[in-house]
Every structure is written in C-alpha cells, then in structure tokens.
Length: 359
Image (cartoon, rainbow, N blue to C red):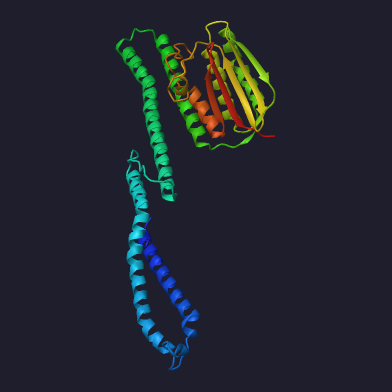
C-alpha cells in the first residue's frame, strides 16, 4: 500500500518530549511569578527597604529564565531523540524481521533479550507466529509432495499396463480391464479424499443441529457387512448427543473412525465399541477397538496425511490412501473440537472426539 510520507515516530516522540519539557518550564516560571514575584513591592525601596524591588528582580530573572527555557528546549530535542531511538530499537528489529518474513524467509527469529515489556511481548508473539507459519508451510509442502506422489502412482501403473498390453496383443483383456478398473478406483478414491480434506480445512459448510448417535448408527449400519466379513463384533452404546455442524462431514468422520477400527483390528475375534454421550457442554464420540499393540511414538503421526505407519499398513483391498485419520482430524478441527488418540495397553486404539454440544 502506497502512503504519503510523514513524520517518523522517533521525530514525533522527540517533539513530544521537547514540548513537554518546554511546557513544564513555562509552568514553573508561571508558578514563580504567581507565588513569588508579584508579591514583591514595586517601589524604589524594595522589600522592607533592604531588598531589590520587583522591577530589578524581573530584569535579573528574565534573561536567566529565557536561557533556561532555551536549554530545556534543546535538551528536550537532543535527549528526546536519543531516548526515542533507544525505546524504538526493538520495534526496528521487529520491522526488519517482518520484512525478512515478507521476502519468504520464515526461519528468522527475533529472540529479543531483556525483561518483559510490550515490545518484547510483541516480539515473542511474532516469533510464535513465524514458527507456526513455517510449520504450516512445511506441512503444506509435504502434503503437496505426498499427494503428487500418491496421484502419480496409479497413473504410472495404468500407463505401464497399457504399454504392456500394446506390446503383447495376446494378453488377457479381461484381466487388464479388471486391474485398470482397480487402479482407477483407487485414484478416484484418493482424489475424493483430497477434495474432502480441502473442503473440511476451509470450513465453508452450513452448520445445522446433528445428533451424533444417529450418525454413528448410520455409519455402523453401512460398515456392518465389513465387520461381519472380518469376524469383528461391533457394539454401539450411549445415547443421543447433539452438536452443530455439517451432517455430511460428521458422517464421514464417524465412518472413517469405524472403518479404521474394523480394518486395523485382530485377524479374527476382534471387537470394537462406539459410544456417544454428552459431557457438560461437549458432545463425545469414543471409538475403541482391539488390535495389535501400537508404539506410543507412532500414535502422533497417525493423523498426518499419507502416514499409515509400519505397524498399521495394510496390503488388502482396504489399504486406503493414508488420509482416513487426517480427514477425521481436519473435520474435528473445522468443528472446533478436539481429537485424542490413546493406544490401549492390550492392543488397539482408543479414539475420543469432543465437539461443542448444543441443547
């Protein structure tokens, strides 16, 4: 934004300091006149016949007062300029850091030393903002790189299969079409997941009152055949609990959690429980399942895009695209909620979603 040139803050403070000193000096002279000089007799004998009269005192005092006023004005200008420079030095460092960040360098930090004051509080807040921006940009860059890699993989597989079919016309066409369809389906699922993740991150959805217990029942009914196929016992508990948000996104959130709990379970005889309840001003959904023990250091990475984890990677038809819990985390964040992942000592995972409740 172009602005008209104006006085610097340092010059304004300098003029303010000098003006304050000049006004203080003038007030002091006024006090001397009001409470001292005007009570001195203005006659030839002076005060009690031994002291100078008012005329002589004024002639003696006025030049000295004028010199003092000039000195105060000069001292205010020089001292104010130096003092304002020292006071505004932290602001200069903050401005330089802001310009550096504006040029694309987010690694720079102010790290202002000294005791706490307004400027150092501003510098610390600016450092925190830069740290968050750098982390967010790095996360977006990793996401873009991973998304490009994930999208390129099915396309490269399709291209390879088509090249093989072109070189070998006798190859079974039905097998080729079936494999192409599987690869294309995976690419479509990945694209839809990316679009959903972007939509939930933007938070541009219409909010309405949603009963999470009904959402859980719908998701469980949809995934019940998958649970039965894998021999997983699915148990729904709890009562009605309402929140405000997008019914579509909340259904996807619960569906991802339930599917994740089914897929990453024991090979046979596993169990999982989905519980809904209202806790004060919060609406809670808990999804708990059996499964392999999870290393504690693996749990924080499960909500990162394309981070499946070596202990949770699947090779079957429900391998997914590595965005299930990332989408859940994004939807929960867009609904002003929290997501907690806790590994169970006996194996499996306890996922707790807390969303703002509504009456």
